[in-house]
Length: 286
Image 1 (spheres, one colour):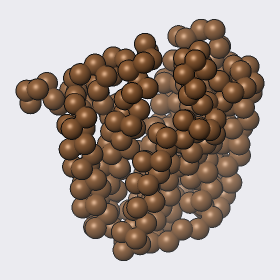
Image 2: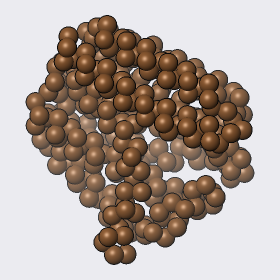
Image 3: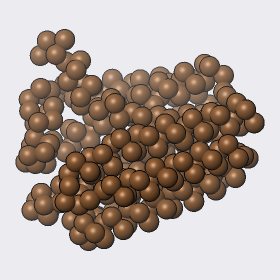
Image 4: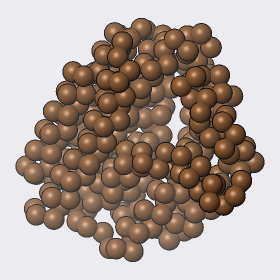
């Protein structure tokens, strides 16, 4: 594949536009850690680490799931099953992404160098969880929930309750909307022994579980803010996030793929952006 064709294929592989799900929360963790804006150099290396980590995570997920994706009509057009990228090319991309992550980590507090194998291990394990447990959504949440924890540690060199609570909030948020996303494949999953909450419990119970997870998300965001010393501006932002999540569940209907796509995509991107904006306003104006 020519170089000009390879770049868009790689961007499609890692779903670059979905970076908005994790990156703002990583930066939010960095800001809330000391209720201040870190030095520009520190933010730069957090950004590079996140780009490397997310690229590695998505590439590994697509590589490991390629046989399943090839069987599913909804995902058969992805880069590896469709032949726009070969497994060897994706493996090389994984190695490069890992190298980027390690270079960035080497410029951050020493503890980040000790801890980097944890998220990388999670990136490898997560794609396999859907092969044996409906709790795969929770493991995905844990994996992405490491982003704000990493941002926190990158600033302070340690972790306290504020960072833990923020990480748990992101974990329940991600798990909740991944359950909604899995409704798109409920029939395929049941027919091919792919495990998910919708496939195990049915669409209506799955939506109830998703609502419960997102209720917990809001509570954890409030707790994280209080533990970090955030004030009214932060809490107002969390209130807006809660309203967006309520809207997400109002529009999500198991029998309407368009509503599920909107709930999964647009609503959750807005959650991430609104929350990060609230953190920035709180930190800069308080």
